[in-house]
Length: 114
Length: 114
Image (cartoon, rainbow over all chains, first blue to last red; front, side):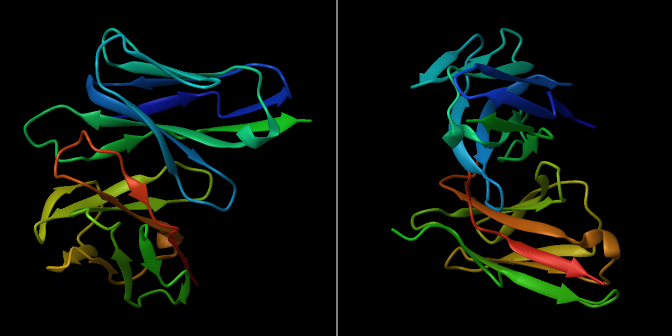
C-alpha cells in the first residue's frame, strides 16, 4: 500500500541551530501537507504544497516539494524553544477516488535545548 | 468561531465492548475525516464522510463504522473492542470533498481498552 516515510524520527538541537526533516512517498502525490503537533496536543496545519518543485516560506520555516512530487522537506532556520514538537508530513493521493485521504508519515520529534 | 470539537476527551472501555465517539466540525466545514493515532505514530486514516456518505476508507476492519448527520457532525463507532484499539482518535474537518483542503483537527478522544 501507499507509504510515506519520514526521517529522522528524533532530532535534538541546540537553540539557534538549524533543523531539517525529510519525507518520501512510495507513490506520486497530488499534494503534501505539513502539520505540527505539540506534546499532548493535536496536529495543527502548517502549509500545503501542490506544484512540482514548489518552495514556500513561513518566517524561519522553508518547505519544499520535490520535482517528482514524491518527496518533501521542512527546514527550520535558527531553531527556538517554541519550535519543539513533532512535525508530520501528510501526502494527498492522486486519482479519481482522491477525496481527501491523507497518508501521514511517522513524524519527526524535535527537541531544542536552550 | 468554534473549531473542531470532540467528545468525550477520555474513555476507558473493556475488551469486547462497543464505543461511540463524536465530532462537530469547524463552522463552515462539510467534510469530516477520522484518524487513529497510536502513541509515537502518525495519524492513520480511518474514513471520511461527506454529504452523509462514507467517501473514502483506510485499512481498518468493518468493526470501525461511522455516520455523518445533516448538520455535518459525525460519529465513529467501534465494535468488539480489542486492546490494540487503544489510541488517540482524531477528527478533522475540511471545507470540501477533495484532497486539496487543509484538515483542521480536534483535540481528540483518548480511548483506553483494558
